[in-house]
Length: 160
Ligand SMILES: [Zn+2]
Image (tube, protein in one colour):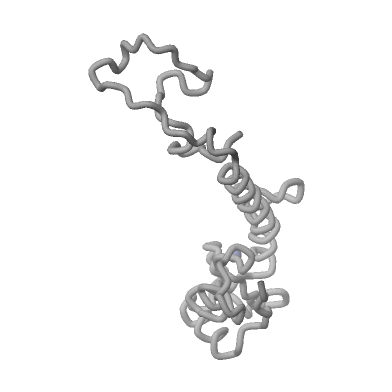
């Protein structure tokens, strides 16, 4: 698939973003831009371009890369924290880690969906009345002893 090109946001867009944020850093630290060296704003895409969908013709992302509502102005220091995570030891919490995590999840899902059909066969229906007193043998994992719902409908479906 054709990939859109990353371009720096036009002046008009930067101005809109700064106006919206009243010339303050968008991370919530409350500090002002343009008050000294190293306080020029960095323009950051929220959500990151790497996790956005791409238009069919490959001309842009969805939402568009220069949509001011999805751009956040940050101090350099705060921008680095967002991109690489709060700690240098792990990328968790930053975009780099988030994108990697998302890719892992999508891969898992793809693997599961291409799995042999018998794995996805519907279980025979059980009578409601026998619930909890079923004589049927049921496999119980240590993780979900009291939960008889199928694993895939649960929140942690992406775990192995
Ligand atoms: Zn900040």
